[in-house]
Length: 162
Image (cartoon, rainbow, N blue to C red):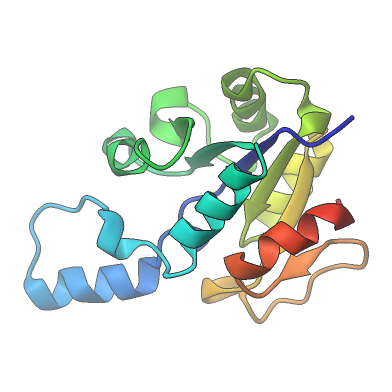
């Protein structure tokens, strides 16, 4: 089946969590809500490139539900572990991803930074998966057979590999 939906993990895949947490600490933040300025610089250009290819886009991660709002203008659907009541790597999380996407699992690509929390469980649920190597887990090697990219700017070209 053809790929029709790309769903992104949020933390360290779309959002630069390390930089955001440092900024919140320096600012003495008392409320913690992600905003567009927290996105990795390659996130919005990647989303635009995938839209130009006619793909639907989603974002779903282990996060509080209030973080969903800033992503809504950029993707077709957003899901959070808090709203769904289940966290990755639980298979139930990916059941919700498939339901939100509205297409069979094999038409969905999940992009995440963690092999254990994103790639392996997504594949076990029947989705395709690509790992982006960045954040705290960047040094961990990808097992053989897992498509790995270094930035979201590489994703449009990597689609042919999954």
